[in-house]
Image (spheres, rainbow, N blue to C red):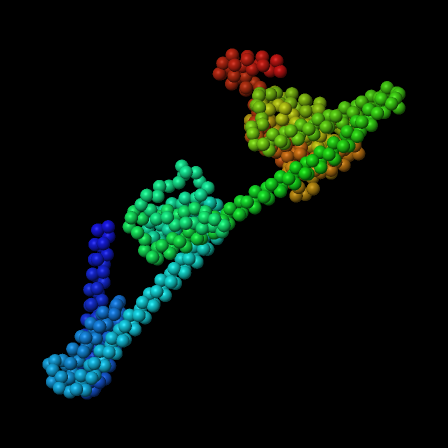
Length: 498
């Protein structure tokens, strides 16, 4: 505190010397001009006007009423000494000169007071303009910032920049452990629309705050309160919007479940009634009905697996359980779960020469392949062509499922991987579908570190491609031998048990 007080006194002393120097220079210049005019025969009344102009200029180029008074007194003494009879004395012989000097002092004091007042008004106007500019800039910056942390950081940086003091924010919703210490600080409330949001803590170290600093900090607190209220309202709106969307998704899923389950269940019940009521007597007709019941049941099972998988994915939990699996086994198992794939479609598959091993969740990868193959069956006609090709390149196993159906509508290559996006099958015996299959494929492949994409074939039809990390079995055996055969034998035994 003593050092600061000393610096302030030095600055004030330096300014006082500067203003005194300006006063002396202006009065001296006015006196010299007066002497020049006197020699040129100008009357002393006009010379007194020159000295009055010097007094007015003194008030304009200095700060404070006292410098104008000093200039006026010095000008009167100069006028008395150089321009009144007897010259070069302070005696006054003519009463008119006394009246002139008295009126000169009165006019000088009034002009000095008015000039000083005008300078104060100008200084206040400049300060108000500067404050208004700061407030406008402050409001503009708070309008363009989002997020509680960014809002508080902006306010604290503004306080530091314009007052020189460090500050902190204490919000009401924060825990007690996060609240800063308020010792040796000044508190300013952050007002919200309905309630106080928190406080700004300015660490002044017991030095106090000036009036302008206090006004500025209160303005920052007000802008911060408005911005935090806006952020809180936005968060509530987003939560409400999210809840509405969730309710909409639930309603959509329930409608899809009730609609899509009704058709196969009605078919199963009808086939069972025909068999039980002995309306079908020939063995081949009974076999057809039983096959239809089986296909409908498998479709219901796949639909339920998709629903359960999507529930696990949306829960955010780790829904995959990895184990080393043979890629060829996964493909053949998926093919066996797709009804009508070989019986009603021209199906072709190809596998690489080397045996590929992938560290995956077998059930989920089989589900991905089943969804893609079932999707191809839905979108191809009777005897339509479906291909499944698996290849290996640079540590990746590439799976390609393609068909010669109508293909994907242009611009829908990414949209079809969304939830509840269903593209109606065009085959004569296809069901509508819930629109979860491709969404599950994308999430499962992504969880395994791979990628999936959809595209149209140049010759017609759709193509789905995804890849997973994999290694040839020979390379895997070499790695296992390098790390020891005990672990490998244990895994082989475990694979045989499965």
